Image 1 (spheres, protein in one colour):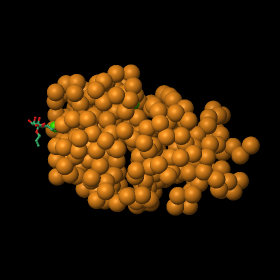
Image 2: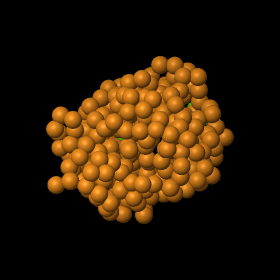
Image 3: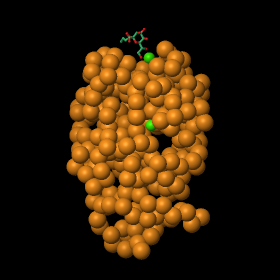
Length: 269
Ligand code: KO2
Ligand code: CA
Ligand code: CA
């Protein structure tokens, strides 16, 4: 009925102002259903992916779709469904098809139904600098320029971009509190960062809410290249080394339980 190439197009063309599920189509006519955030900061945000940790103790197993040597960050493989985006990983054709400018990210507790995502979220933010233009218009192209693979460079000097964010829920300080106290010593809140490399030359995909200032990025960045030399395979998984010092303990490099048990929802506009 209100079909478009992105939630922004559906909003602009049909004046749809309600958050919820919509049908979208790609340039080649593939139709899919996803969630549109039509309200945050002007609305028109398309959910294109979710990164979900099904079991932090299972290291680079089938549930770790965002951490593999095949590199799902830079291909057109899709998986999951919008209704299960907080139950398992999700990636739809919008991820590679939409020509976007900005990103929005929601951390939503696992198993939350989509109609409660907004209210249940523990952190929400978006970019406003139209940075995706500089990297090809979406993450598919960005990660072609910055491959998420082992041994592509050195920590800090070969990381991808860090983009300033505007918070819709939370702030720089609350962001740091979700990550472990040791991580706090090497991150700055208020950014989203891409392709961060660790001390052992392993690559992670996204550091949500932060900019790395050190090389233990496996404790605050998600997704990866499928090979993490330190303690192999202990850091290999969608939420990498988030439970390095225990499950949700918020001790050492361990994140809070809230962070560990929330899916990371990625939107474009
Ligand atoms: C630790 O005790 C340890 O972890 C370090 C990791 C963290 O990513 O690189 C080193 O392996 C270190 O040798 C030691 O095992 O240090 C701030 C200290 C944490 O977990
Ligand atoms: Ca997963
Ligand atoms: Ca380390």
